Structures are given as C-alpha cells and as structure tokens.
Amino acid sequence: MKQNNVILFDVPAVRENLLPMSYTRPVADFLLGINTLRQKWECLLPGNYSYLTADYLAEKFPVVETDDNIYIASHVVATPALAERVASLAPGEVLTGETTGGEHMMIAMRGTASHFAELSAGTPEGVAFPDKVEVITRLYDIFLLNGRQIEDDFQILTHRREGQVIPRSNTVIGDPEQIFIESGAIVEGVVLNASHGPIYVGRHVEIMEGSCLRGPISLGEHSTVNMGTRIYPGTSLGPWCKVGGELNNVVMFGFSNKAHDGFLGNAVIGEWCNLGAGCVASNLKNDYTEIKLWNYPSHRFLRTGLQFCGLIMGDHSKAGINTMFNTATVVGVGVNIHGSGFPRNFIASFSEGGPTGFNDLPLEKFFDTATRMMSRRGRCLSDADHRIFLAIRNIADNYK
Image (cartoon, helix red, strand yellow):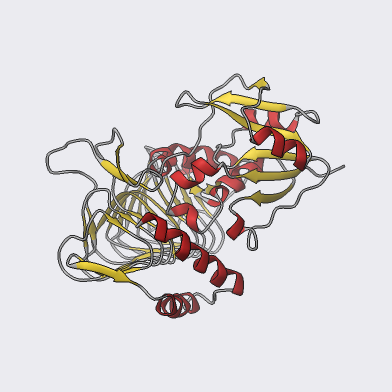
C-alpha cells in the first residue's frame, strides 16, 4: 500500500507570531502535551513526514515533495476525526475550516507542489470541516492548551498498553489507571495525584523521593525530577530535562534545566536553556491587571486577555542564580542573563547582561557556551546548526 507523503507547512504570519520559539524549529516541532504537533499527526495519519518551513531552516528540516502530497498547516492540532478526514482527501481537494478563535483557514490539501503554491498564494475555497479546529497561533496558546493535550495524548499513547507496576513506596491519589510509567523509569517515594488528570512518565525518567505531582503531567524520556519537587497540572517536560523547586503549567521543550528551588509558572522554555538556583519568574501582576506580552511582528507589547503568564524563553538562553523575571518576560535565543534585580520584559536574541543593561553577545562566545552544554548530553552543534544560528542572528537584528 502506498504511503502518504505528508508535508507540514508553516504559515509565515503564524510562524513570525510564534517567535522566539519558531526561530530554531518548524512549528510542527513544538511540544504540546506529551507529543510534538508532528508526532500527534504521525500517531493518527501514518506516512512519510517532512517540513515546509523558513528557508534558513530547510537544510536541517528539508521538504520531500512527490507528485502526490498531503499538505497540512503545521499549527493545527491533530484529532482522530480531523486526521480521518485529511486521509480521505481526493487529489486536488482542499480542506478548510474554522478555528476555535473564529478564523477561517486552509487546514490541508492534497496535490502537487505547484498546485499547493498556487493555493497558498490566495484564500482557497474547499470542503469545510464541520468541527472547529484547535491551533497554536500565540505563544501562550502552548501552555493554555497543554493540560488538555496531555489528556488526549495519554489516551492515544497508552491505549491497550501496560506500563510498569507502580512501586509500593509511592502514594497514589486517584485512579492508578491514569498513571503510566514507561520501561526504565524510576519512581520511588513520590506522591502521584491523578485525580485531576493523567500522569505520563517516559522511558528512563527518574522522579526522586519527596516529590509531589498533580496531573495532568508529562515527563519526557531521560528527564529527572529532583528531590522534593512540586509539579502542578498542565506541565510537560521534553526529553532530557532536569527540574526542581516548583513548576505550574510549564512546557519545557527539551534538554533544559531548572534543577533547583524557585518558581516557574505558565511558561514556555525552549531547548538547551538553564535557570540557575533560586530563579523566580512572576506569572501574575501585583495589581491583578491584564498582562501584555511582547509580540515580534508588531514590535510592541500586546494585550493578551490573561491574568497569568510567566516566562517565555527561546533556545540556548541562560539565567544566573537568583535571577528575578517580571511577569510575562520574553527572552530570545542565545541570551545570557546575570546580576541582581529585574531585567526588562523583552530581551533580544544574542544579548548578554542584566538589569543594568544588555550588550550584544558575540557568536563565538555563544557557540562556545552551547558546545560545552551540549557535550554534557553527548550532543554537538552541526555545520547546519552553525549556519542556522548565523541566519537567526541576522534576522534577530530586525527585532531589537
């Protein structure tokens, strides 16, 4: 049987709106729930997958096009019903729909590369999907939708599977069937509260004694939860993360650390980030007023309608011990923050400094730090990565 050739395409306006998280990856590689957006589609619509993203990312994330492709907007969250409808598309057919925010969009189409190019240049008509579709178009959508997405992914990933038996040293609150521990994970002396949502523990995760977890929570493979950590609902860790202290509704993409005491809530953290001991990030203003968040395309802070929003941090950014972040601070890629006091609410990529001001961070210094951190996990920057960060540096100058 012929395999579907699926291409997850970034919509440029959406991609820009999701900076700084989309600087270093296609939107389809955003973590949401237990899986990335791409992995959700792969679970429901088998096929060969590739990306159609920004030109400077194409070397690392190439597109593979044939004479018969299924194109899917990368910021659309897959559901079983939506995947079934996309799978049934006839050649040349377009699937449109309305988002939960009330916007009309092209969800998917089946056809050739030239046909897709023609359609994406305009506002194509097509067959309407009857249900509203969930999309990621704003940075805070990631943590707002995360809890429910953990629940949905949990049902799909654990269906007809058996995990490890929960060791007797743990305290279980709620339905044990809502706790799934993959092979190789170590969970001892932990409070696991699944009465409000499932808890998914990935392969080779270690949750140290004295920790308290209240689902929905997802812990990616090889991650570590240090002793006495408190994790609240709606939190997802990607692979190889290390956390401690208090986390509430945090999405950490992978390979990042917040290993010590300190609070992080309603936050999105990229890959290869480090928050030093005692770091605290506010997620609520003292006067309880509406939060404004930095928006890259408009070059200003925009109203969110939210009362809670914490730290947004792009890949390879670091914060020294006891750093204090104001409510809804946005940190770009490759930032090094240090010093006492509160830094400003938007810190441009490849910057170094603190509350007294920031200077440009030389790329050589950035690469040196990234190489050292990644080597601790047996990883390294490729030649393609070097070219990507050089391109990001040039693009980021437009947003300072």
